[in-house]
Length: 133
Image (cartoon, rainbow, N blue to C red; front, side, top):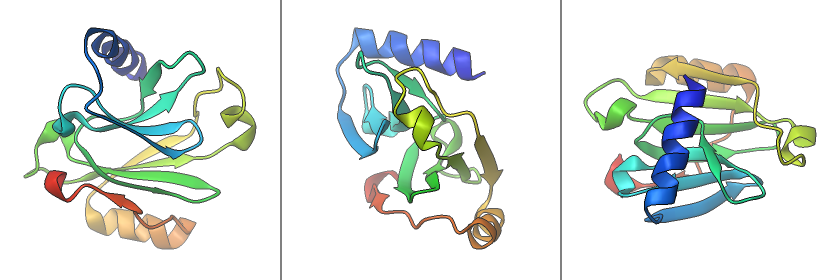
């Protein structure tokens, strides 16, 4: 599944410009390809290409020294239960151009995310796109 997202993401990136490209931390970027509603968490390589780490529409993200987190509306459906990505950071992999994240968890629903946030010490969302919420 991640390979499909990566290929689709790369094809989309070559066809169009970004409407949004913001560094969250290190190689993690918040990228909207054709429209803000396509906002996603992206791992950026040295050559500028990126690998999407979750589906759109991302509406909030945050990080600390251990985790990167994102809140996403699956397939852009704001009425569906929110999915939360929890990426465990590995500084050694972040410094290596081909070292994509290996540990990515997804939880569904605010209650489950709040439980994981308390258990793991997850960061707050420091970037919020109110128009995508």
